[in-house]
Length: 438
Image (cartoon, rainbow, N blue to C red; front, side, top):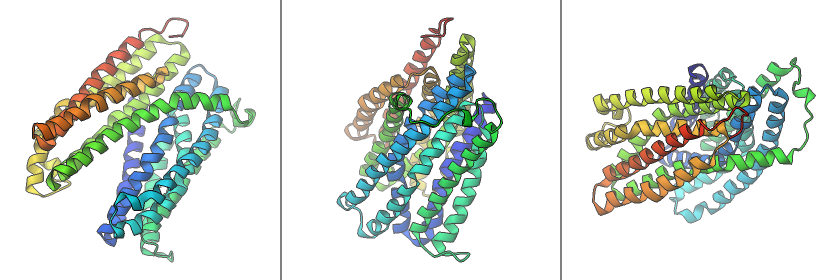
């Protein structure tokens, strides 16, 4: 599990670093540029993440085919994934561009609006290579090939940083394009990611029996539909989880600037730490799926137990760090004494419930390996939106607990979702019969 998960975790951290690099690089251009790039990137990712989440279905289909020894089926799922990625890229690009046209109605400051519209319009060009990269990554991970994914993201970060330096400020003979240059640098980095992983696939399988050249590249509407029906609930689950924290951030902004700052700092820490159970979740999906393909009941259960154990240890250790050195962690982001004081308590609140956040992530991945993406979606909808957010709002504004109430309400919903999803996983993992059907 660790051999598979560690490169995936580093890949997730590398993904976060690309956004951080963009923000840091444009910061010398002023607050308007900083706000435009940050907001524009968020708008684009909010749209693109639906496409990337839909392609999570490849974890299930490719890993189960690989576990069954059907490499030719893995290739057919790869081709269907590429075909669906092109369709999704066209649809999502059109949707994102529609948002760009509507931005003037959202009340942005004119200085920010003048930057964010052309920035997002150029960023949309990276949708197709981004979704192609997502297909290649899910395919390789499902076949236990994870180190090239890690190398691709680390090297893409270097390319992105160099591209930002060249195109934003006009270095090495390149034109000084400002924030638009940052969008072009991101486009180049994402094309590089897709090409790099495609070459890895070609290099690995150029001499193998049932290689890519032995499977015809034909439009496969049936497989595309199966990816879509399994992947859309996964995409909605991610969107629901990201959306509830985005809504909480907007509520924090209604309290006070200090509360907004506290919320953002704690959210940054929690999001960074969450990359570890997220990596374990992807590894669990792959190992469970492969065991299902082998019709190996003990392998299914052992894969889940391994992921839960590792996630539990990590989340408990980091919760202990929150308790021992909260100010030191918060001090990485701010020196404001009021933010440090309030943030310490908020970080401790999240730390008390963090274990269950890890559980819900791992359970989501393990269930995806079984082919179940709807249960996590339904539980996220109920737990976060029907229970967590209303409770957070009530504690925050009706009980006047402020940002403490927001995080307590969301943490309670994370606990509910984590416990129920874990229970569902252990029940489902024991219903695999010797014939391999559920």
